[in-house]
Image 1 (spheres, rainbow, N blue to C red):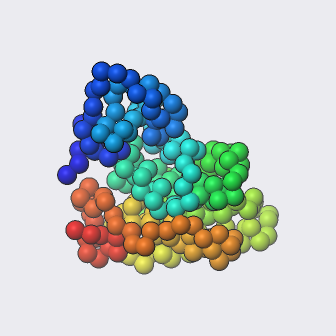
Image 2: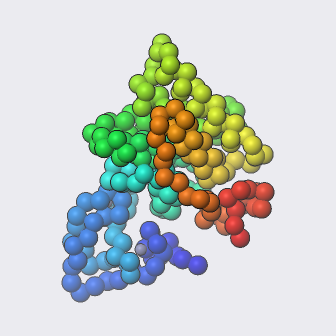
Length: 234
Ligand SMILES: [Zn+2]
Ligand SMILES: [Zn+2]
């Protein structure tokens, strides 16, 4: 069992306190540092990222990521200590990883940054518990925010308005295949998979995908559906 509380926040292996500094890049923001503290796998997190909040580390990680695989990127971010088992940070995580892979694929890094910042504003308006109180899972809403951003939709636009609402509807249908209680991991995986199919159908872009998704967080979720969840592996 890896220990992410005392050891490396990325992989859980032991920290090394070396005599000499190494040139290392922060695993979250990607910036270059000299440090004597890193893990056996040479992971290093800078002091700023160490104490940053959830949405900030999602933004920073996405800005420096070159990933084309939304599930893999989401999984990496979910392992960071700022991301709780459940919580409204997943409402930003979903559009953030989708914007990242989409604009990485197009090679538009400036647009990616602008859209990631706008997605943060929009998703911050979707409160925790919206799934149960509004009947609208925030990760599913996040996929609608993503389509709205890449198509520049607004309330009076036509095709882009339609696509954005279709996206949220498709994600909500996928989320609602399962009974509650809510699980922000399961619901995010469902929303991201649905968005990947949608991108292939409507935007001629097939994100890279994992053949089977295995949840690494079941032991943290006291309401886990266990074997009834498609992502559960004991
Ligand atoms: Zn590590
Ligand atoms: Zn950093």
